[in-house]
Length: 124
Image 1 (cartoon, helix red, strand yellow):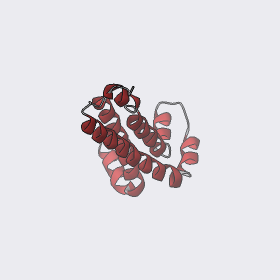
Image 2 (cartoon, one colour):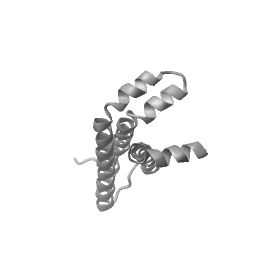
Image 3 (cartoon, helix red, strand yellow):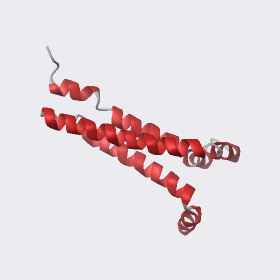
Image 4 (cartoon, helix red, strand yellow):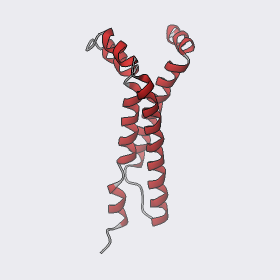
């Protein structure tokens, strides 16, 4: 006996959101995560300098992971549309993908447009 469409939908509902969050953490691990730890007093500048050495690895992994998260989300949504089921946790997944996208875009802006982002941060 085949499982109900809603049961099938629940099995893959969290995968796109989890993939997006992992991608955001990977992309942020080079610059945003150490900066947040320094601002909260949990780490020093040495951690940031160490993590900045690996941005050549973390930024592409973050971008690739985010693209994979969106691919998983839209594949699941298309599958549910064809089966007539609904995507469980759709709003939560969209919110997590939005946060992950914001983190990855911020990391990329800090990397590729440092003078623009520095000027923007100084005005805040």
